[in-house]
Image 1: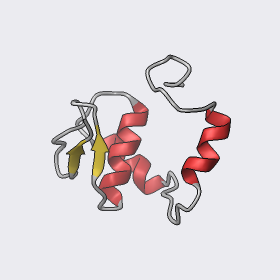
Image 2: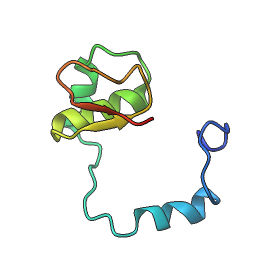
Image 3: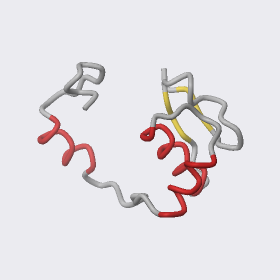
Length: 83
């Protein structure tokens, strides 16, 4: 969606780029009921994608790397600026 809106630029068509970008990644975090419940409890703007990203980082004790200032410095979620 971001690529289509020209807010994210990829070096190739997303259908070609995504399989290459994910090659070698050993771990993924599926959207679970625990993440959905954590997302609902966050004091954050209403964008569901941002809420799910932040909640996934919280539930799995990950660092959320983002350039979105609204997500930096969230409650008890570790964040890192991606500039």
